[in-house]
Length: 220
Image 1 (tube, rainbow, N blue to C red):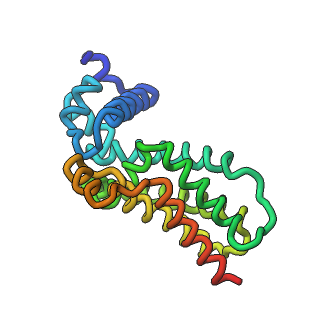
Image 2: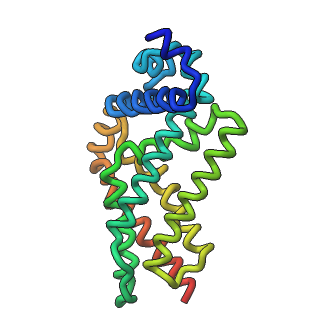
Image 3: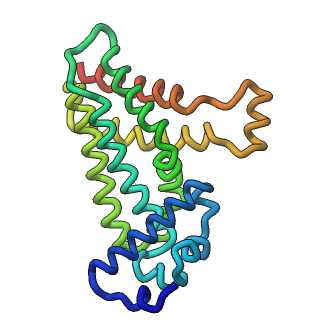
């Protein structure tokens, strides 16, 4: 690492360091699960001492939560395009099923986002300061509101509260379904002997369809 890099003080240099740390985190996440990446390994990848990494982020967990935020925002942009324009109600719950399946399909293409969501509550939110937690939860709530608004635009029978409930349900279902569909090698072998591991996208689509259809049925 260079001494100049350590001594930089200007805002643009600070931002460059943060960007470099986040890029290193993404590189490591492409190789192994978040639980297997230590702060030491992350700092070595970016060329900094651990203490220097902690000048720009609260903790190892805070780094990965910021990666999560970027992935979540990018996914919402993709989802908005994938959902397309609102359509009129259809017989049964065909419209709700299409919305749910679109959400599931776009999430299935974003393995990193799904892994970080599944690690968020049990791992990544356990070693952050109150100040960071407040900022992260505010931004996470804004993303949840945006997801609810995207769904409510396509399913206007939903109240704002029901749309928010559905958006939170997406997070909860991904948190449980992702690790269940991506077990360790030993568990995968044992599951195969009992019929196989559930397919993530199909299971998520079914769960989201049932949740969305149920909320619509209650609103009628």
